[in-house]
Amino acid sequence: MEKIKILIFVVLSGVFLLQETPARNPAANGLKELPVKNFCVVIDPGHGGKDGGAVGNKGTQEKNVVLDIASMLAKVLVDNAGRNYKVVLTRAEDKFIALEDRITFANQAEGDIFISIHANASESRNDNGFEVYYNSLATDDALTNVARRENAGAAERKDPQPTDSMFVLWELAQNEFQKESMNFADAIQAGVETAVSKPGENGKKYLMRNRGVKQAGFAVLRGVRMPAVLVETSYLSNENDENNLRSPEFKEKMVEGLFEAIEKIAGKINRRQDGLK
Ligand SMILES: [Zn+2]
Image (cartoon, rainbow, N blue to C red):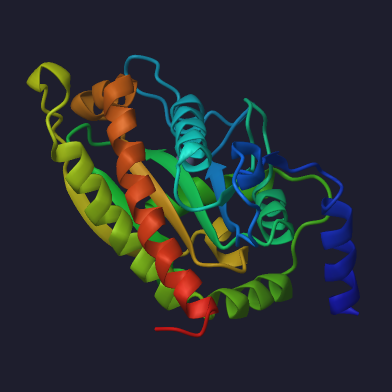
């Protein structure tokens, strides 16, 4: 019975349209069309609509910053001359979307990887930096303050709530991808650190503390059937970090780092799919 309920929930949720960008078509460039494997990246800009997420002292809203970064990343992936990326955004505008729907979108798109993009906030204005999470399979102890805040969107839904057993099934699915999620998180941490530490135009240097890779119980990461990470880009509650997130150049650097990490993990996953190590 529980399984039937879950199926009904998935089918009902599936009527929302995914916002896709088309994969590049080699034939359009006059090249002979070869069977090209797509690598599908699901990008999940956090929050949206009535859920603004964190807000900085200068009024910067998390929902807008993360949509900027997500859109820039989507463009870099689709425009790249190498791999054939298919990009799916869980939202491409300022719109509220429940966490459960984001999960359903990602799974129906059969994404190869999932990246949720957020900005952090803390009561202490000294807290700063960039961190990357992958899912913890533990439950209670994994509910850090950050995860609690980011999970809040899951309770906003009025239609059927996922049952506990649904979360259990999701967790089992995610277990399979734990190692690749960890590798992806490591690649992002390294990629973004390298990209951001390069001076910008006019030699501008961006200070960004690297808080490293962590595990926590994020609802959105539990449900997706693919390697998945959640990136906390920086703290909007910190003055330097908020200024960084307001800078188009800083965001470009962050996107460059995310792109490098995706390239790396896409290579690994494609090799695994081909049965190579
Ligand atoms: Zn958030």
